[in-house]
Image (cartoon, rainbow over all chains, first blue to last red; front, side, top):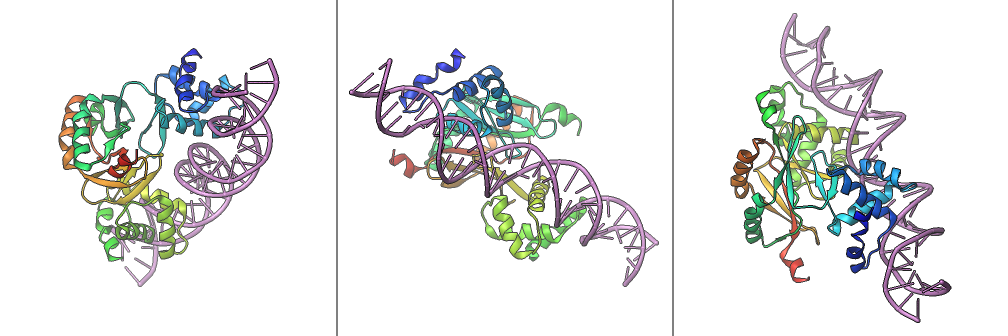
Length: 141
Length: 141
DNA sequence: TTCCTTATTGCAACTTTTTGCAATAGCATA
DNA sequence: TATGCTATTGCAAAAAGTTGCAATAAGGAA
């Protein structure tokens, strides 16, 4: 759980607190390595911290995302998944079989600059999901 | 409601049916001009078609999106909104004040080609939402 | 027009997510 | 180490979204 404790100073510096619930959720995400749904996270977290509630999981994930410790991504269907904030990346997901792959942010960097100058907005978060058909599913068409 | 009736042949050609519920939902979206949440759509639709249910609204929106008559977009927070399918476009949304603007698909066309050749996926749907700070909210920082 | 097939709807029960509020517990300060 | 402020949690209730199934109705064929 040390991995999670490392985040404490970041939170305190902003006037927030490190709690067992936050530690546990960070720990779960840190060790899963992939993105998880809130329900998945709740199921894992309750094994490590008896009594944690779903309410807390939802609120904590939103909080951690706002503060840049985790990242949220929508994978179609209007549900969010969460992963620990690592290098910036995006996803491409197959509409047919659900397979996914990561896309490095470098590929989108130029587009981001164009969007910023065209819109006047300063782009902050960067996760984007693209949808399509993976190579295998294209064959089966 | 003629606007909605125009879609009937498209559906029939695929073996689907035009129903009062679908007409009403298309009518609502067609005249709103902006994207609406399923609940908004339900509230509007029930005024025009007594007895329509929320279940039907959710299912119909998903159906219409699959068939290309409407388009779904996530605007952060993991909830989908829907709009009538017009020209291809994307959104930029301000994380601070919630203001939005449209981005024409032409700006992303090149990126899409790059992504396709880098990933092997064929990109199908195209709606993407970017998040950032609008010009006004940047000033207030 | 009437009949028939089956796509579509509504109902009811259920799962997922959100919200308000009182009780709890981090952690800065003394 | 003890104290106080207030960020955070859990509970309970509500809102939003989903699912299975029987009843209904669109629209092609007779």
